[in-house]
Image (cartoon, rainbow, N blue to C red):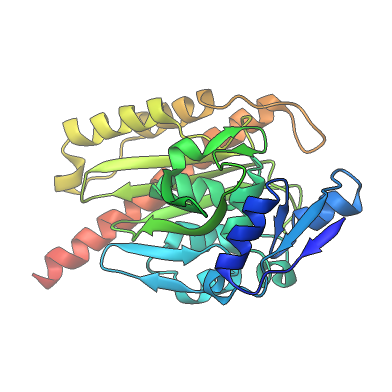
Length: 296
């Protein structure tokens, strides 16, 4: 196994173009596990740790551009207001040591359905900034996951950053695991309210071959909130609406039985998380409306 260690982003792109099978390594929290257990033996490892640009982020008027290697700890500390769903998901990643090393780019590159960042990125409507010597392109998060641990990157592309819309409403993340730390998700659920467009987006992890959205559930909830005038009247979501939303989220799953949980348990847990996160986010939205109206 050859170890490639570029000193700049341009050198990294050139190395990836010359060796398309090279496996990028930054935090190493996924790659090293596969190598140590002999699940993967790449011909080349492409070390990205010396490329400082990957550890930076920019907060714009509407969007956060998050470098691929920004550690989860930094997201928790500095981007909680702009990216609340991703900050909550970051809290659940493994241990403090791994949160200090791992970043969203690694989750995306591995594309495991159990990656903690995926539900939050789906719910927020992120875009993946992929680059090669041929140029840069933005891949909508909905199009990024193509199969079990497969993504839409071309062989010569690397993830440079993720562009995520700043939260315009409450966001939540919930995860079920077999213990409280150092655990792969049995299943996970992300929910984001987008009051500016009066829409809701979801993200489901570890309950299908890829991270997925519960689109039918979103459509139902968007229609129910609109027809009931909930965005304007600030009323609580009715139990019947919450239950139907939860049932549709559970139906969006296509899970398997494995050592962490059964398929039926995963469906049930996703439904429970969907109902709870909807309650939490909507109550936060109602509270913010009351505060705004009181100030006016």
